[in-house]
Length: 381
Ligand code: GLN
Image (cartoon, rainbow, N blue to C red; front, side):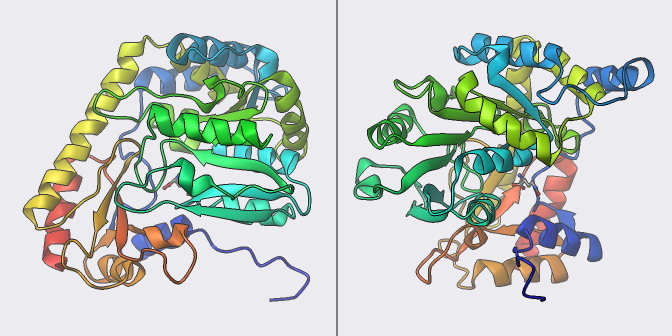
């Protein structure tokens, strides 16, 4: 590697999806549904491609989509926003990148929770920030006051939060969200709150946005994802929401990253955000059935799984399942020898003493695919 280049890591999703293609494996690694997605939205997008504008959208997003985001979060989460506080990005990954570029100055400390979604650390470090890790422990992955004690100092500027948490499948409860909020307020931190899985939560849970906590409205960048809301991950439409004064600097960064996002997809997403609540409920009920199908199939094969309260993911505890190999090795074997791609959870953690016995499986797949995967996983035992 020429020393002039920054050697960023290859994302585990790219690595595993590449291996899945090479080995024609069932891909339960990178999280995306195998269904085509809601037909009304795909038709709306097609219509907009033919009859609407195909030129640059306004950099901050189509006004109709900004208005739809305001209406959606107000109605379903009680989060008060204004169109000036909504920025449309090319996916939540860009939203995260633009937020980090806007917030993090060289030398700033940024608190993250491990397991940490793999985009956060390279972005913070490329911005010159210093990552401060707070490690959560399996199988509960619980946030407590105690874990945060003594973590923040004079250089701490921001905290990145992911709720529900990918890859662990935790949907943090009211007490944990309040704990994070109090920590941010006490230390005057900006919170980058990645809530892309807000609609993918199970067992009757309701999502609590960090933005809605006391003292958080003026310091939170709430990030959402149409890909995850509607099962259309390839559309790459994200939202950054908050007080206009905190969203403004992010909008400036966005100008120089992608500038704008496909207008026709934006107008289709605006239509989806206006759906009645029961369509979102129906989508999560379907995903919950898939989660349960994979969980019970794996249980029948002798695998122990950890709770999946939200996200597309279910984790297998290898140690508890009597498999004493590290997760990365297991994932390599699974994809090359047994035709199943999975994600090693240790890829989201650091330190020699990190847990290395957990793999993540995506259940947003057709029943027949899950059944086939369960058989293959059983054979691999
Ligand atoms: N969020 C997806 C996952 O967790 C990956 C998205 C990506 O590869 N950028 O699987």
